[in-house]
Image (cartoon, rainbow, N blue to C red; front, top):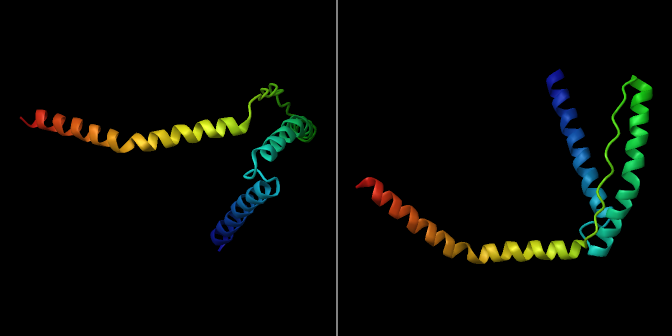
Length: 118
C-alpha cells in the first residue's frame, strides 16, 4: 500500500514539475519571436544570481552549512536569431548530404566485409 502511494506521489510531483516547466515556457513566450526570448534571457540573468544568494543565505541560516559563492555567470552577447539560424543551416545541410554519405559508408562497409571474408 505504501509503495503505491509513494509511486503515485512521485508521479504527481514529476507531473507538476513538467507541467510547471511547460506553463513557464508558454507564459514567458520562450518559443515565440526571438526578441521576446532574448528579453526573457535578460530577465533571467538579472533575477537568478540574487535568488541564488538568498537561497544560500537561507540554507546557511537553517543548517549552518556555508555554500561556496558561485562564479559570476558569463555575459552572453549574441543574438539568439543568428545562433538559431546557423544551427538550422547546419542541420539541414547534414540532412541533405545524409543519403550520399549513407551510400558511401555502406559501400565502404561492404568492401570491408568482402575483404575480411576472403
